[in-house]
Structure formats: C-alpha cells, structure tokens
Image 1 (cartoon, each protein chain N blue to C red):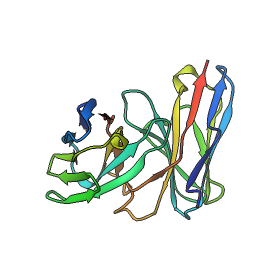
Image 2 (cartoon, rainbow over the protein chains, first blue to last red):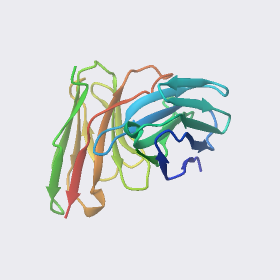
Image 3 (cartoon, helix red, strand yellow):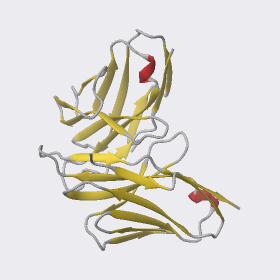
Image 4 (cartoon, each protein chain N blue to C red):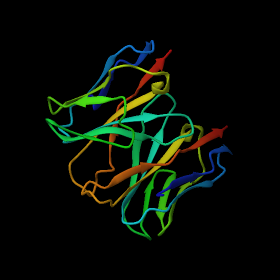
Amino acid sequence: EDQVTQSPEALRLQEGESSSLNCSYTVSGLRGLFWYRQDPGKGPEFLFTLYSAGEEKEKERLKATLTKKESFLHITAPKPEDSATYLCAVHYMTTDSWGKLQFGAGTQVVVTP
Amino acid sequence: NAGVTQTPKFRVLKTGQSMTLLCAQDMNHEYMYWYRQDPGMGLRLIHYSVGEGTTAKGEVPDGYNVSRLKKQNFLLGLESAAPSQTSVYFCASSLSSSVIRGTQYFGPGTRLLVL
C-alpha cells in the first residue's frame, strides 16, 4: 500500500535550536512532493513544491530537500513563530490521469523562547 | 482577494440530521476539493471537482454528496449525519495544471460535531 509517513510526530525545540523533519514515501511515479504549514484552528498553508531528487527550496528559516524516497524540512535557528504542524503531501501517478495526492499525518513543532 | 472561504465555521448536528457546507473561492481556480482531517491521520480527500458541473469521488466519499453548479462554489452535503462524520472539514482549490495540482489553497475549515 502506498504510504506517506512523517516523523517525528511531535518536536519540541528551544529557540535557535535547529532540527529536521522527515517525510518518507513508498509511492511510485512521483509527480511532486509538497510541504504545508498548519496553524491551530486554520487551514494548511502552502510552503514548497519539490519535483525531483536533489532539488532544494528555501524560505526564510525553512529549507526543503528531496531524495528518491524521502524529503526533509530543515528548520534553522527556529523562532516561536515557527511553531505549527508541518504537513507533507505526495502527488503520484495512478491508473487515472488525475493521479493521487496523499497527505502525511504531520509533525507538530513547538518552539519555546 | 478573500481566497477560499467556508461556511459555517462550526456546527453541531444530531445523528440523522442533514446539512450543507459551503465553499467559495475567488481565484478562478478550476479544481476544488473537500477533505476531512481527523486526529493522527492525514487529510483525506472526500470528493473533488475538475470544473463547473463535474464531480468525482475521492478516498472517503461514503455518506457525502457534492455539487459544483458554479465555478466559484463547491458544496458538501451530509444527508444523514453519523457520529463517525465528526471531523474538521477543509475545502481547497487549485489551478488545473497537472504539474502543480498539489499546490492547493485551503479554507479555514468547518468543525462539525455529530452527537
């Protein structure tokens, strides 16, 4: 069965303490991998799209990387405002032309001052 | 631009009652989606639409119906609510390009409690 797994489930960081989140996938026919940020009580907000192994994207203190079977979201010197749940989603080929977009369960990040 | 809006924000239903959730987008997006989000699980696709007048089933369509009579609106209906449908419902929209279909814009969500 196609799977998208995020780890860890939760992460508690001190302000300035860099760390990485993982999104691993077992799907074949990857069309794209997406990272979203979700604040409590709100809808997910798009961060990055990665299309091929070796690709990297950056935005402020966040950097996303992609390999053939996983993606990492690196948070450098995080601030309390980086506290959120980070979701990854994988778009992959299926028998119909639309394909499928599958979300992971998310990693909840808390950054304390 | 308001982006994607959802109505209502919160609703309590009794088992067997019906209701309709409304989603509206002002970005002229072709694609629209309804998801549900439950604790410990990823977003799961209920139904989606690739354009006005068309709808298709997603991963968990049972117990739900949808309609897309206008390009900017996507309605999600629960004909006979069950406690298992207690969840947070998100609507999203995206452009039609298959390459960037995963770049979706989400609404703020509707919290539904079925007693």
